Image (cartoon, rainbow, N blue to C red; front, side, top):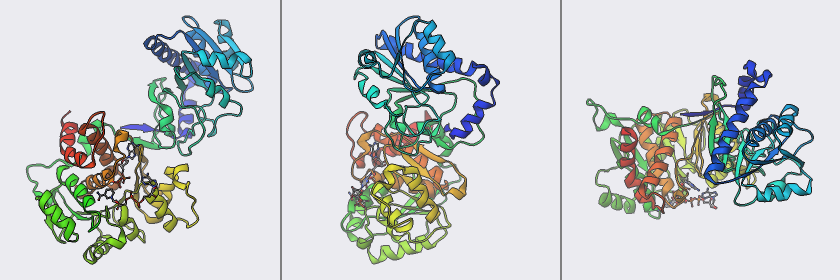
Length: 480
Ligand SMILES: NC(=O)C1=CN([C@@H]2O[C@H](COP(=O)(O)OP(=O)(O)OC[C@H]3O[C@@H](n4cnc5c(N)ncnc54)[C@H](O)[C@@H]3O)[C@@H](O)[C@H]2O)[C@@H](O)CC1
Ligand SMILES: Nc1ncnc2c1ncn2[C@@H]1O[C@H](COP(=O)(O)OP(=O)(O)O)[C@@H](O)[C@H]1O
């Protein structure tokens, strides 16, 4: 598991180190930046470095790194704020670094010609958005330059909440502790490759964001034992698909069966029922006892059959865990006390937010702060929200005290019709297997992303292939 910690907690961890006051922490950080920069220069056969140094601690890290690199490379430092970290600036001067002001005519040409640029303009104390007057410098960086950010890409929201104008790095070097900026959807893409240099900080007690890794899957995935039978393993009731979206029923139920559910009971009208009878012979049909429900994929509320509507109302009124996808979200009109995982994409979350948070939310509500939008719906309905995207977040209600989970395991080829229906099926298996909505959502997102990769590494993927792949991917993750 990877953890990221809130900015105040990281500050407190730094303040607890006597090495902060002596400058030793900055020496370790800047040495780490210099080592990573030198390795990338080797790999790319580069010789020239430009450092963008702001007035804060990150600027200090960047200038000290410049002083180390000046032993072997031609290094220019551009000061981007009013003032600079004094000891670091002195070290850069002493090492022969050419120091320029940001408005110097030479700055733009140096950036255009640099093989590697170190971005140390803003750090975890920065506000979202590039500092005034620096966007021209960022634009001047040559397309072939390797862009290495110190701690976080300048301009990115350290809390990872708000999308803003920022540097898009090839790589970010951070120090001992990840921050939300490195893992959350508004900012992760700007970080590029993430490299962690240990400078000796002690992790705070509680993370703000967690991310599962492959080695967490054997701990969390429900594996049957010798005393299990199909009922004890978990029966999933699926109320999905309809006369129109027959495929959504097939995709979710196929994923559930290949992901290893004890049994699936399907409730739906004749067309998807016939399809499932032919394509997924393991499924049984009609209402009955289940351990969890999956409702709504491919079932706009107005298309739901009377039998489906009755079964959904009963499921939502029960004490059983429920996964609510797509059209099922329209049936969720009041808070649930039983475990509930909802799986909207951004469009569906906006529609739901307008119903349960405020009818006046603007079109940008989810995009401008995805985690806050998911949290508002989670709190309004006391459900856990899995908000889908290239970075998928699993956001529990605030009262739970559980941290946000963030997963980014799938290729962009996952953006294909029906892949969300597959994800909902995997979520259903895990709720039926007894996982909490937070764990179920995070593990399902990881396995879904990896299965998409495994289905056709490096190339396009159809959703049904992901559904067929899930079981093999789970086996690979359980036995690696
Ligand atoms: N073979 C099938 O039977 C399939 C059935 N599907 C079902 O089709 C129904 C409609 O699905 P839609 O996803 O079109 O839902 P909606 O029609 O409810 O939402 C689509 C709207 O949301 C907007 N939007 C904003 N952000 C988005 C994002 N990140 N991803 C997707 N749309 C975004 C779109 O621009 C569009 O206006 C659902 O019930 C779904 O389960 C789909 O899953 C596709 C495959
Ligand atoms: N650019 C992307 N990169 C990786 N995964 C993505 C990307 N865009 C969407 N996804 C994933 O693809 C799936 C799409 O689900 P959804 O929008 O519900 O589609 P559908 O309704 O057609 O099934 C989700 O799991 C989402 O996280």
